[in-house]
Each structure stands twice: as C-alpha cells, then as structure tokens.
Length: 122
Length: 122
Length: 122
Image (cartoon, rainbow over all chains, first blue to last red; front, side, top):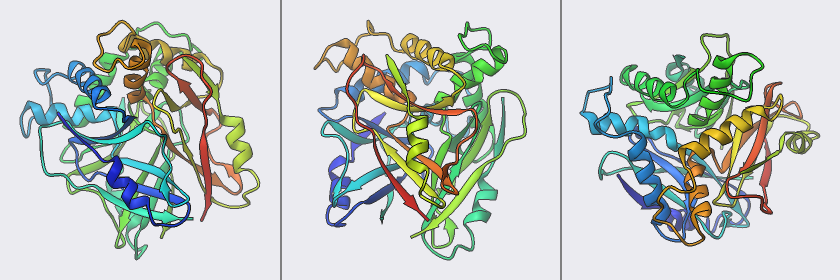
C-alpha cells in the first residue's frame, strides 16, 4: 500500500480561480481511494494503512480472483475511502483546514494512476 | 444484503447532456448505500458483502431496536459506503474508469428503493 | 466521542433558496466526520459509536503520537465517515429522506468545531 500527498497540487489547482467554488476530484480506478486526514506528517497515513491491512489481509479468502489476492484485497479495502471527493474553494484558495491533507492511497502496490478534476465556480 | 448495478442507467443519464458536468446521485434511505468498485462481475461485491456482514453481524447487540436486529445492523453497515455520490460527466458521457461500476447495496434485505439524481453542466 | 445533529440547521439553510441545487458541507478538521443515518433518535449513533470505538480502541498502538492516543485514534476513526458531503436541495427544501439525519461525530472528545457550507442552485 502506497500513498501520494495531493494537497499541494490541489492548492495550485484552486489558486487563481479568483472566487468561490468546488474542486471536484475523481479516481477512475478500482484499487485506490482518496482519504482526508492529518497532513502534519505521514504518521496518520501509516496508522490507517496498518488498520486497513489488518482488517482485510491479503491471505483472507476472496471470491474475486481475476488478478490474485492482492488485487482482490485492494478492491475490498476501498470501502474505507472514496473515489469521488469535493473540496471547497474559498476566495481563490483551497478552503481546507490548516492541518488537513488529501491523500491518494493505492491499495495494491505502486501503480501509475490518474486523478481527474474539475473546478466549478459559483 | 442485495445489490443493484446502476452503472448502465447512470451512463444513460449522462449521455446526451452534451458537455462536461457532474451527475449528483443521492439515496434518501438509511439502510442502503452507494459503493464504487470493480464492475467486471459481481465477485467483488460478494467480497464486500461478506466483509461487512462479518464486521457487523445481525446477532451483535444493538441499542437501536425499532425494527429488529437486521434493520439495526443495516444502519451501522452504512458506514462502509455513502448516500451521496458525485460522478463526473465528460463530453456528454459518464467519465468513470473502464472497469468501474456503481452499485446500490441494500443492507437490510430486498426493498423498493429510489435513487435521486440531478445533472449539473458547467 | 460526541455527536451533533445538524439536520434542522441544514434544513434552514436550504429553505428559501427557492429552487433546486446542492448544499455543499465541509469539515475543516481531522478528528471529526459527517455521518448520514437514521434520524429517528440517537440510538443508531450510539451503535455506530460503539462499533467504531471497538474497531479502533484508544489503547491500540499508533505511529502518530503528536497529541496522545485519543487524538491518534480519532484520526484513524475518520475512515468511517466523510469530511465533505453534498446534500440535495429540492424545490427550496433539503431533499433528504423523512427518516434521515445528518450528524457531526467528534471522535476525540467534545471540541469547538466549524462546519463550512455553500448552497449552489442549478
């Protein structure tokens, strides 16, 4: 399980819109997920990773076996996050809390992933 | 626990909007939930069902007992999904990944359910 | 763990918009979360609280230890809810189900919290 901190990139996207609105983000994948949490450092992400891996270990029996148990586990692990996330844009800046971070968690090893997004101003 | 694959119906809703936007979906119920996951076949949904039923069995003690333990379990099981889900519309088509599916999970037996939706173009 | 029922306040926000739209809600914090569930009384919230505390007890080992184990537990417990939630506005009223309620769950003891929101009409 790997994660990428998206917070600074999303701040850049919001910056310059010059007003209020919503930044829609979306993951077109089935083994990764978006998580909102403490952005102070990566330790909370480690706690979340340990919890999720403990809840749904790779050696659990799975019905879905197209691509092996690690892929099957990753699909189920997605229930702990979301693939679609809306972020506030306030006065041309990402309107999130000062200690919040937005992370992409890939639950089936490192992979090339795409984050779709669109900004909608009010 | 029963599920309905909403992917094709939502593709139809998005089709013909002729542009970019957001498809807002919403479940006005308290025992069902929306899940985004592998749409290749139903096996991942079976894995998710088994995991959720194992986490929150019907014979667990519940405080909420208005309509019996199956209803009480269904309420708590909703924490694994969402009732409000935003889907991207890209160039007049549902902009989700090729292997993604959108499912309604009814966590308290089969019931008649309504999905509310609205398309908002940018 | 404490919760606040936001349903009536959000009904007031939606009321008077005079049309259809989306009420965007957002929590700029990292130890609380939004939950949609049965609004008949608080018993389902108690069931959810007991489940979450059982899943992630305070005496679990955590990597994140900036502010003690209760804070660390609260961060991880957030995986069971969302910080960003979109609610339908239908004909100038909050368009949720008659038995649904929207709750803020503070997972690290009672604290002063802010809910951000914005109404967007179609």
